[in-house]
Image 1: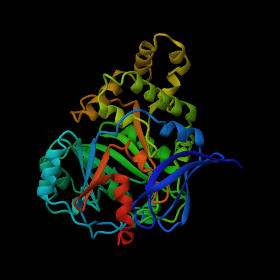
Image 2: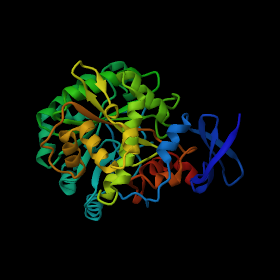
Image 3: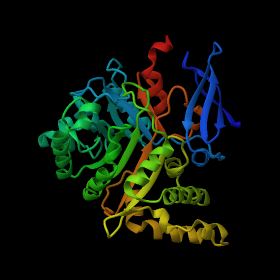
Image 4: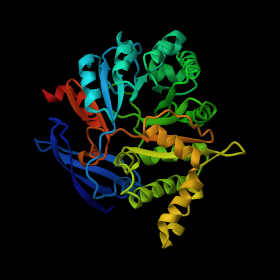
Length: 418
C-alpha cells in the first residue's frame, strides 16, 4: 500500500506538550499523523478514515487566522454529577473570579461568553456571573438544577437567555453508563421548565460507540417538536481527554454516515450543502462579515449541516435542492448562488440564523428546518495546530487563554507539563 506525505504541520509533543513538527500522511484511504517527540519516539495516529472528506474539511485558503467569536470561561470546579464522558479531568482547577469575568466581558464584548466548567450551576454566585456577561452569553449545563422551575425563573430574571443543555438520549441505561445515574426524568422536567420560560436552548449530545448511536433519530424528532425553544442540535464524539469511556473513537466521516443512515438522507446531499456554503462564502467574501466566514468555514473538527422536515414525516437535506453543476457552469454564478440559497433554505431560516449569529432576539422560528453541528475532538496524538488557527473558539482557564481543544488536551495531561 502506497503511503503519501500530504503536508507538514505542527502538533503537540506527547512528552512535553510543546509544539513539534508533524506530518499528515495518506495511508490508503486513511489519513494519519506521524510525529516524533523530543527523545525520538515516533507516534502514528488516525486522523480521518475518508481522504476525500478530509481534503474538503482542510482545504487551504489565503484567509488569516479565525476571528474569535466564542470565549468559554471556566467558572466552576464543582459538579453535581460524576459523568464518565466529561472532558474536564478533575475539579482542582482555579475558578474564574467575578472580576476576571468582567474583564473578559469587556475585552471580548463582541463575542459570546460561555459559562462552563465542571457544572456552572454549582457556583453560588452564578446569578451575578450571568448579570456580568449580559446579553452575549450562554450557560453550559447538565440541567439537573433546572428541574426547579423557581430556579430557572431566577436565572432568567438575572438575564439568562441561552443554554447549552447536555442530553444524551431517551434511555436511563444510557445515563447510567455515561452520566452515573437515572437522569432522564429529571432532564425532561428541566427542559419543560426551560420551554416554559422561553430560553433558547442548544441541545448537546455526546455520542459513544455501542452506547447511544441509536438515539440520533429520536433526538432529531424531539428537536423538531420543540423548535419553539430548541435552536439547534450539537452532536460530539468522545476522545481520550479528561474522563472518558474506553470506546473506539468515531471520526467525522463516520459521524456523517451515522447521521445520514439514522435520518435516511443522502450523504451526497449533506456534502453538497457543505460545498455550496463554502463556495458561497468565497464568492461573497468581501461583503460577508469575517465572523460568519469563520463560523461556517472549513474546519477539521467541526461540520455543520441542516435537516428539513418533509410533509411525509421523513427528512431531507437542503443540498438536495442545490445544483452545483449549474452554478459552476453558469456565467451568472452569483445570481444562481443567491437563487439556490433561498430555494434551499427559505427566508425564515436565513433570518433566524442571522438573528442567532448577531445575538439578537429570535422573533422568527423556522419549525421545518434544524441546524446540526457535528464535533470530533482532536487528541494529543493527532491534533493539528495549523488547523486550530481556523477555530474561532477560545477557552479561559487557570488565567490562560488558548484554543478550546488545545486547552482541554493540555489540562487533561497536566502531569506531563511537569
